[in-house]
Image 1 (cartoon, rainbow, N blue to C red):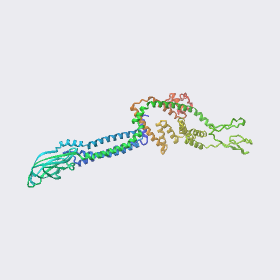
Image 2 (cartoon, rainbow, N blue to C red; image 1 turned 180 degrees about the vertical axis):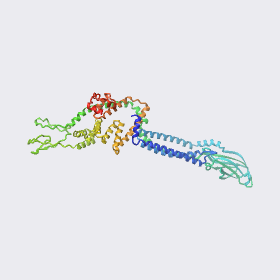
Image 3 (spheres, rainbow, N blue to C red; image 1 turned 90 degrees about the vertical axis):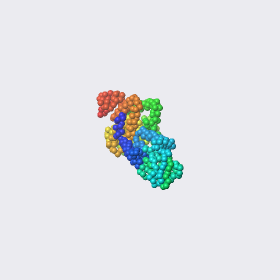
Image 4 (spheres, helix red, strand yellow; image 1 turned 45 degrees about the horizontal axis):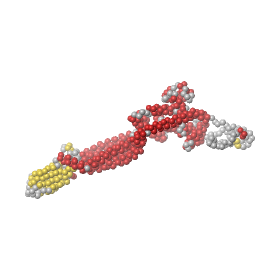
Length: 598
């Protein structure tokens, strides 16, 4: 089957669009979440002080919000993968979904672990702090201090502080100020934001280091002003002061983002724990599995030997089927003849008494008949009474065909297929148009491995009654077992048109979905590997043509093989041949040639 033809039939099968719909819903759902995540991250970054003049973009805040949404989408992704595996009918595709999911989870875990380690390493904090402290002008030394008494115009001195990096990579931790003077000074220091709002106001002691914790004020304030004020209203403050600003990584980087990444790792580990058993389950039946490829490469020689053995077995089966096909017409003809009446012989002419054994175990004993004159019992086939010589009137035996058919069906249940065939032959002998008997014999022959003869009886029933669902269903099963997927699909479609409530036909179509999808994948893999299968393809074509010939009424395996050997390699060529050409083939009579011509 070509990939194009297989795709056409696959689209006709129920459930083939489910996976496509699931993927569309997943992509749309994730796209909406990504848009919402970007919008929310930008809004919160704006509240955290994002602006263009002077430029400031809080990278830490934006990444934190984005990671929260990524964690949520990772959890949803695990759910969607499970749904895809559930509704995927191909084992190869299930393996592929599980394998790709495990690989993606592994990569995510590795990247998350590296990022966590990088953010928590002290070296990272030191490197970023040392790198950006020089850019932010974080210190001042020996700055003159000359303040008038409290209340005068010159009682304050001010210097600027930058609270964080323009990209939010590092933020202000604390401010260290020391005032050097001969005398002890009464000073205060006030930290004021760019909106002239006082954030803190603390005493500033002279001749010692004063440390002020400003980490809580570094998030939403880009520029801060430090104001030193003389609180002595009588004595001026004269001296010099030094200050330094200590920067460090944002707590979002060092605490919140690692927590989110740990949650991400946990989700991915859960995903791996779910998908790993699925990958192992379908590894041996998927063409994408290394195990499958390895087994295929290692088993080339074994496969060749097995193919030879199968070919010999197939030849033996064909010989048996040919012999059976040549005798089937005669066997059926003999079955239609009534058994001859028993002949009464003299005691002296009788041979030795034979014990009842396997040969006559299946014979049905008939009851004796009383003589209408003297009352003595006589054989049911006797022409006259053996006592009084009165002529016997033998009534026709009434045969219950339904009872015989029931016995055949019970034999099928007991897996006694040869016995079942004999019962159905008995029923056909009394009524050769009985659909149940014909179909029962076809079913028994098929279960006994004689599908070539079985399908002829099934075709007979279908020709008699095209709407016989049981016959169509059996024909579809035989065709499916012989690899005729397209023809079986057409039979099941016909059954669904006749009666849509038949669940077994719908179930069979579902099974064909898996088979056709695997055929598509196998065909694609074979094409990509460039495997040359010319000889096998020719052999497979020959088998397919012979099997298609056997679907014609009166054509068994032997006659179908003879037609193929005679040069008829397809159905169109067979139909277009003349009756004279057909009768030249061994086993094809003039009457059968007319049937073939239709």
